[in-house]
Length: 302
Image (cartoon, rainbow, N blue to C red; front, side):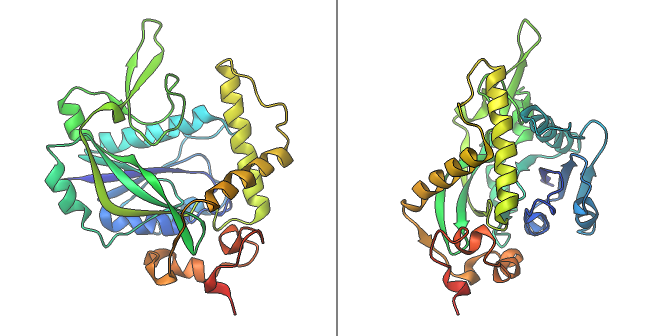
């Protein structure tokens, strides 16, 4: 029988206002297990996830624990750890997801995977990107699933995560190899022609459920880590890396997004796992009206 596994990483995701419980609930009907690599949560994230049932596998030890600062290499290590754990547990297909993704689990994913198990190395997913919960922008399909069994048969040493050659924590699987200096180099699996775009819809809520302070904190830590990594590669940092400058850049970036084609969505078209969280959104959360910068979603108008 085809085994489908999924993996993600967490660290204080409830405290940091990710829809982590809703995310994991949404993917559970589609897969045989969910591997969660936790970086040392001190809130109740791990305890709440354990309540979701026997499909949940928690990895939490000294090897997964975060350093004091947010660094890209740690994220990469934990992503790769999750992928490797799924592989060790005998997965045929391995799905990577972030905990701001909600899956339309009414889709017959297993039937689709059965039909492509001998044909493709990777599966691309369409993502509906939300900055406000009443509209979305369509993102280009990214590789979020790997046909691990087929890759193994072809002798491809596939892992996921941090890669110096292509730089980053991308949504594409990486084929790793060691150079003559014993350093990891990667080649994106996306260069392979064996790809399939699934019709499964993934709802990507990003910062929708975060208040402004939490959003600012996470954006600041993320960008400091990003520029820190660039500096290790010999690239210079921007002249102004203050909290205020980073937040201003964040707002400007998404202002451009709002000028693109927007797809309006009714609340009953969101996955059922997230509907209550949307109904209970308050004006201090981004998904309500982007902290007062945009028109309030029709859901919340009196």
